[in-house]
Length: 479
Image (cartoon, rainbow, N blue to C red; front, side):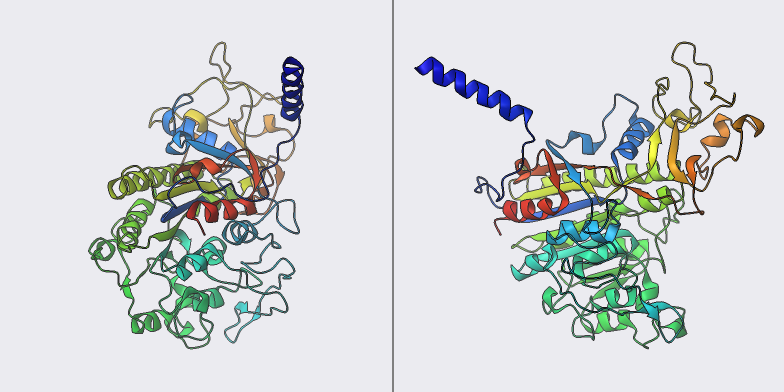
């Protein structure tokens, strides 16, 4: 009888292994110290193909990025409420609220219809036209309710979709003046769910949405939000030197807006004017860690996405490496504060994929160097290292795009043949299968990767929905 039961159990185990394993409806009971400190890293547009290409670019095929070394991992489904392929607004809202929303909507209920803004008094499409729907609580707001400090760091505008989903609730991501107003305690449009103090650290670009049109900004309502933040006790910095000089022992709120729009690509930035993502994240952690009740920090590598929309692989891979280096530095910094990360959860993922692809059967290239293009170069044969030709007798690149602005019309053999020097240049834009307008390469609906380390990281595994990440972070924190 015992053997029969064992055989039956084995058979059931085999059958279970053949089925799709679903995550439990509720998180398992907490078996670790609650995650007092939570850092959520988001590589905007950093799909698995981009990660793979960035690994080869930086350390070669057999190397490892920091993200590769995180002990726990999962694959994340990213579809939105109304679309197979999500935008950043819907995906980040899912991470922050656990709710599926329509594309373009920021942290609102599922029934919220996206309504593109109308023209404001200055003729800019920034005037909100929202009807219906309701705000849904974000992780930042839940953290504030528990007395934790909250910070947002990004290389894009702080009012862009990804950071905006952390602290604001609007029916359309283009309402960037409203998103900015949500940050100012006591002001019209302030998100009161952030408490009387508001965010503790805010670093990135996008000062135009805090500044009046009379001063070259985008605000037609006459409000100077930076002045209003200063009146609420915020410290303000505007360049790298000022950020470096910030006293991190002070818990006074900090805002740093270093550009009028998005920040520069890291390889192009003026380091005296614009701090890099590692510097901004490091400063944020040092300030937020003063709170004995812990903190919640979002760090976005937003320029990965912009480079990919431009079909510019080199810039995208460079930005991915900067993002990964920031993750490495943050883990080291947190280990100096919490040596075994017993009270710290760090999660790193992407909001969506892009159409970047790696054409097959390339010879191993190793990492990219000043003299070797590596994965950015032309496809070469494995057997003799000669340049491989397409059906038209023309060379082609290892990296391509499913869609993008650059597509040869007719035979590629009739066009000037590509060279490694040409295709590995900083601003080269790879060819695409489907031609789009410049800058309008699209997202992809492919699952993205998630890595986690620290308190509660073991909860992440398998293939899960992006809304599930919200629940697992809450469970890790014991909320």
